[in-house]
Amino acid sequence: MLKHFALAAAVLGGLVMPAFAGDITVENAWARASAGPARAGAAFMTIKNTGDADTLVSAKADISKKVELHTHIHDNGVMKMRQVENIAVGTGMTMLQPGGYHVMFMGLNEPLKEGTSFPLTLVFDKAGEVSVDVMVKAAGAMGQGKMKMKMKTN
Ligand SMILES: [Cu+2]
Image 1 (spheres, protein in one colour):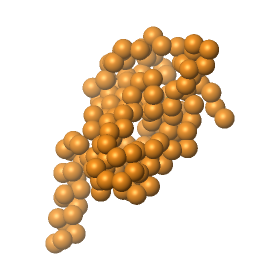
Image 2 (cartoon, helix red, strand yellow; image 1 turned 120 degrees about the vertical axis):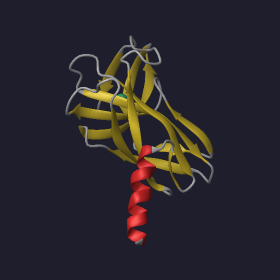
Image 3 (tube, rainbow, N blue to C red; image 1 turned 90 degrees about the horizontal axis):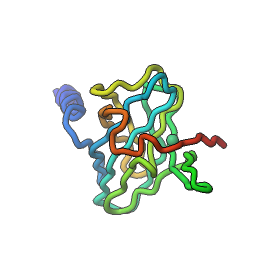
Image 4 (tube, rainbow, N blue to C red; image 1 turned 90 degrees about the vertical axis):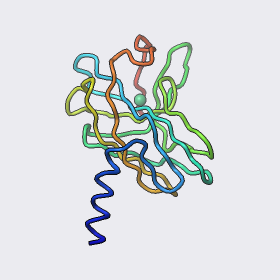
């Protein structure tokens, strides 16, 4: 009986935003629709932490071969993406947004389509796993669509 209740709660929980675990709440998770046959995509979100400092250590999704944590750096006026080992989530709000930290999907199984959503699991050092639905928005969402991006892999 308890088991069934827990399962139902988990299923219902997946349908309601925001998603949370422990002191961590994840809101407004979104990704940009792929422009053409892009093989990579990025997800952005707001992470609220009402507890002590935590760390986002990894992310998991079925939509691509690899899921990485990335940041952007300015290099001679060109914005480049760089993989990071983790993202510090201090007390308060941490924004994953265009031009900054993001979750990167390398080798998309198929282009991200506007109006769809996909599940993403974020793994925090202390809070554990938080699963969110990522909404796919128009390719030009939040501007910066024309920004020149170059991949730099280590
Ligand atoms: Cu990236």
